[in-house]
Length: 253
Ligand code: PEP
Image 1 (spheres, rainbow, N blue to C red):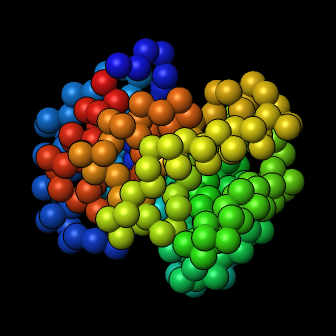
Image 2 (tube, rainbow, N blue to C red):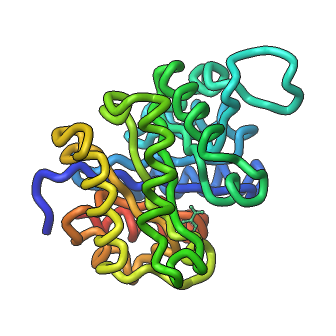
């Protein structure tokens, strides 16, 4: 199938599982994972499992990530987790702006941009999630919404910051609903994202990894990953079942 593309598959476990199931899941994935060199696989567990998983993954090709982070470095912010704390537990990636954070916790574009910057300040790679809601797609404002979400980060972090970042296109209506965007629908938005970045820097637009999230499953992964501008996936529900997740990882081969 695909040749020199660098794929990234990210598991977002969200607030699921318990310590024992997290360890069992990581053991199963670690044992069976066999991906081509051009594919990177990262696991984003709940914060509290990061130290244990960091130990388990020390000798593995699997990378570790976090699902969220504070935009502030230190101080009296009860309940928050700073980027440098994540860095101490071998996190390489941090998801920022997931739609559940934007919608359930009212995270604004500006706050997401600050988190993006905090992740890079701690020398990790932000996975910036963008995506439209169902009504926005229905009223043909998808591109407007994605542009707004991207432009705020470009304005605050600068385009060069995207040299070391990943973008995840996640249509809100496809997350956890079983309704996947068709490969063509997803491709169209991925191409739009590249165009938007190309207004500032063509090389970054060409090389940045743009992954798709929203009900990716073993059955639809290959078709999605075959599209010209889809460089992997952000996987929620299907990442909680080792065989399903492994099959999705295999779909980049
Ligand atoms: C997600 O939570 O980012 C996600 C894509 O979930 P799901 O795969 O379950 O739709």
